[in-house]
Structure formats: C-alpha cells, structure tokens
Image (cartoon, rainbow, N blue to C red; front, side):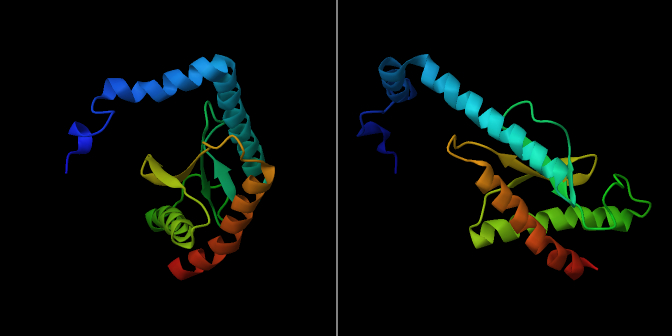
Amino acid sequence: YDNGVVTFECTKRSAALGLWGALSLFGFELFEQLVDRVFLVACRLFELLEAACNFEVLEAPQANIVVFRYVPEGVRGESTFSEEEGKLKVSQLQLRLRRAMLESGFGYLTQTSLHDDIYLRCTIMNPLTDESHLSELIAELQRIGPGLWADLQ
C-alpha cells in the first residue's frame, strides 16, 4: 500500500522538515557534539578490543565503525593460516558469533569481508553508549566464542 498520497510527507523534500526543525531549535553545535561523541566511543571500543584477549582489530576507526574479529586462543596473531580450512573456520566463527548475538538480542553486529576473511562490524550510533556497554559486548563475545569455536572443530 502506498501511503505517500495520504500523508503529510508524500515527498522526500518534506522529510527534511524534521531535520530543519531540529537544526533551527538546537543548532549545528548539538549535532557536532553527537557526532564527535560516537566517534570517541568507537575509538574507545578500538582500545578495549586491542587490550582484550582473542580479538584482532582491523585498524583504528576513522568514523563510528570498528571492524574486528574474535580469534580463539592459540590462533591469535596468525592473520594468515597455513591451512585454508583453519582460515575458513575463523570466518565461520564470525558468522556464528554474529548470529548468536542477534538471536539473543544482546547486540547488533554486522559483517564484512576482506581478502576472503569475515570480520565483525560494530557501528556506534547512540551517543549514550558508554564504556560499560562496550565492556559488556566484549565480555559476551568472549563468553560465547569458545563454545562456538569448539562446535567448529
């Protein structure tokens, strides 16, 4: 059903009215602060993942997205595996971690691939996200990761 013909916002041009209203009420500074905040939170997630066991972070974030993967104990540090099967298993693990997080409702992670390796992506959107949320995310991945890895062996 096309409800565009019966709503106030029947065109995309009208959809900008909400943004214009918020900008006119609060100004650009508030939005700049919100963008800066999510970037700082992403940087903190990067730092926490770098310091945590069993994670490889692709690179420091340049925006609000952190790309990483959980790598089981004994495998960390080997960015390329001698066996294609081992490399494939680590990528499959990322997919299972993502699915487990989604199904449990704990968090929403997306995936991406680079050179046939699967990585997890965490996009920080909520400026109210704090370090406790990030620590909980890391702890949950560390909690479920070993079991999912064992299932792949």
